[in-house]
Image 1 (spheres, rainbow over the protein chains, first blue to last red):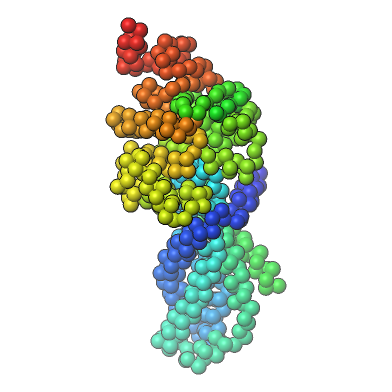
Image 2: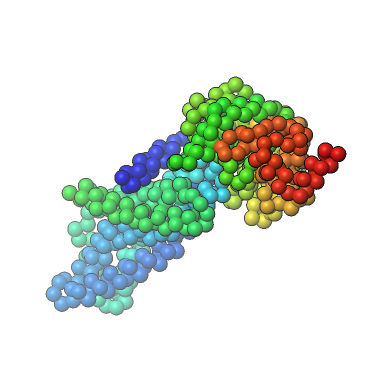
Length: 245
Length: 252
């Protein structure tokens, strides 16, 4: 019953968020700020993780297949892993921790310090004013981060393959090209867009309904991150079944 | 005028407001006093629509606010200014941007006019030199004054102040009280101040409403307050030695 209560309240909140902003100019200003906060400020962590993951996937694959499967499998595996799962799913999960906790704690603090009440008193739809720019910015910028992650992961896999000699450039390039389906990228970006919506709106929900003081805001941030990851995982399974079958 | 009729509000099994009736008049500062947990803040939040009352109604100059939907309420809320206990300033905006915020959202004015009005409001609360600072860089008293400047930016007809003096030293508290009283007179606002600080009540109020056990147990002017009333009111008002001395001086 408790889950149904939260689903109902989350849906109501989405109804308040997904409305036309009261002032377009104010909205654009907030959107640009959020694009920077969610996108630009996450570039470092996304790049770091992607580079190392691409390199590790390359070395692990080479270690597993060594001697009994063709060497081009290394390039193939790096490409498929980065495009199908690592970049579109794990990067949003990591961003759920970074971006999600920031959203939940910011909104939660605004709630307990009556800043949200101040907006409501002014006649402003506070959910729309505070959360719509974050949700739109997430949906726009997180797929871009995921594309960057794919490129960096594959590039680092290539460099490591050549540097360590686990595959020749010709084999690696052949593996990268073999059986490539453009739909895989569409699938990856489709699910990333859904995950971006989840990892901005779910922590926003937990922050928006936070009550109490600093302790409760911290708890709201933790709940926001945990539930974002849970919902992302469930959505991953559902979307994979729907899109790949 | 704000008219409250039969307002009730419960949280679970706990009845916080039990059929409150009150009238708040324009050009007057009405103080709602009572012990902590008596329901003063809940009453204010029910009046401005932050809490939905279980029953009863609130009329703003004849307009039944309780019966309005969200969009209709927006029009009334544009006429309401509110000063929150902690100031509730937006952390990410400077002092001046905080004051400009409601103007940007609702006035439809160009940037130059908005800037001029914000400067005027800050000057009115004597903070014209603090505009570039962030809320974290100003004192508690200054935050309250910025809150007042933001609340009056759109020339509201109704002003609500929730514990405007909590956490302030006596001198700063008097500055805030004086400001609230002057602005109420100047703009003919209907001002409701929630407070349990009797100094502030004696300083700023024209009319006093005493809330006890979720009901308005007594109401009257500041002067009649000194004449006393029900035991609960006397226990609250004359709890401090200072107020007892004020009563003695008043009686002699």
